[in-house]
Amino acid sequence: MNLRRFLVAYRIPLAVVLIGLGFLIGFEVTWWIAWIPFLVAILMIVAYFMVGPMTLIQGYMEAGDMEGAEKMLKQVKYPNLLYKPIRSSYYMLQANLSTAGENLDAAEEQLRKGLAAGIPEKEYEGSAYLQLGAIAMKKGNTKEAFEHIRKAVQIGLPDKDTEAAAFLQLSGICMQRRDFRNCKIYFNKAKACKPKNAQVVEQLNEMSKYIARIPG
Image 1 (cartoon, rainbow, N blue to C red):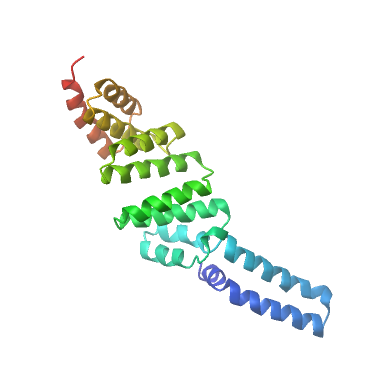
Image 2 (spheres, one colour):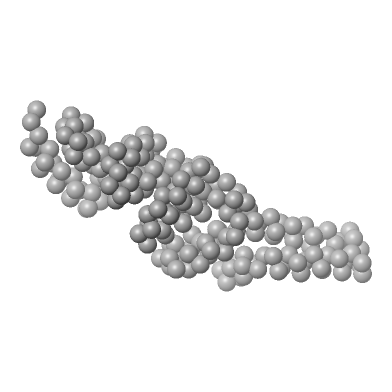
C-alpha cells in the first residue's frame, strides 16, 4: 500500500525522471529501448490527470479516515479532466464530506456536478437524488425534497432499507400536505420493502400510529 501510495503521489516527478532516463538510454544505448520509459511516463501523466488519487481514497473511506480522504481529494487540481465516471465519484465523495460538515450549499452543488458528470450505476444515481432530497428537507424546501426523493425511488436505490426510508419520507411529506391518500400509498410501499434496519423499522412503527388515525 505504501509503494502504491508513493507511486500515485509522485506520478509527475517519476514521469520526469523516466523521460530523462529515456533520453539517456536513447543517446547512450539505443532508441529501440528508450520508448519503454517514455511510454510509462506518458501513462503516468495521463493517470495523474484522468484518474488522480481516486484509487486510494476508497481505502481511507473504508477505514473511516475522513481526514485522510479529504486530504487526498484536495490533491485533485483539475477535476474537469478526470475520466467521467471517476469525476462523478470525486464529486459524490466531496458531497458526502460537505454533508458531514453541514455545508449543505457545497454538498448540493457537488451532488449536481456529480450527476452532470454521469453516474453509471443506477442505485448510486438514486442515492444522489435521495441525498439532494435530504438537503432540501433540511433547508425547509419540502416541494423540492419530494421531487428529488420520488425521482430517487424511480431510478432505484441500493437496498430495501434505503428504499423503505425514502418511501417513509415521501409519506411524511404527503401527511404534512394533508394528502392522506398518497400518504397511505407511500407508507404501504415502505412496509412492503420489509426493512431490517432497526432505525427504519422504528420509523415505520412510529408512522403506523399516525396512519391508523387517518380516516378512510
